[in-house]
Length: 178
Image (tube, rainbow, N blue to C red; front, side, top):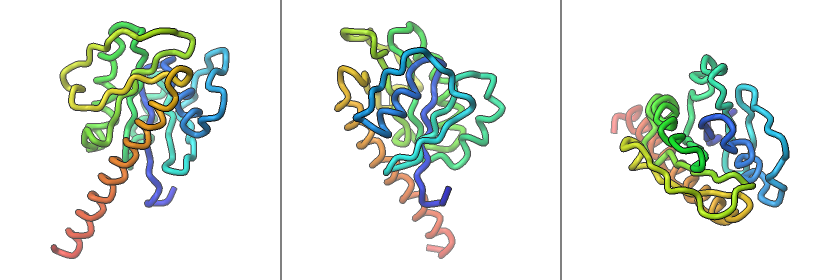
């Protein structure tokens, strides 16, 4: 992957729809529902026109791989299912590992409260831990509100690219002694 490619991780607990979201973002016209759950093995890279989206397994058996997966990340999408009470508190571990661990700022992170496609109606209101309060929270559902997801992702990518440019400019200024 070249240095100019934007690397975005999509992380969170198991079975919250990270792969469905990744597939939708890669091809919004595809059918996001794929029947039976299939666990992602380690990580899978989805090439989008705006970035390489790293769909990271939520299985902690792959935790030894996470430092390598997280290296040089430009942005992080945290995903949880708001219908699974208390799951938002698991996000703190993911946030610490992939956002703070990679020295990213809160503008380089977004939280998707991803309601399962088979669930209807409004999901329960998430109770985010205080450390996650500064991070933008978007309720997503690829079946009921695909436009919300697409627009939130595009706005997030603008912030990520802006932060990446600012980091590059800081490095160049440091080299030039500015």
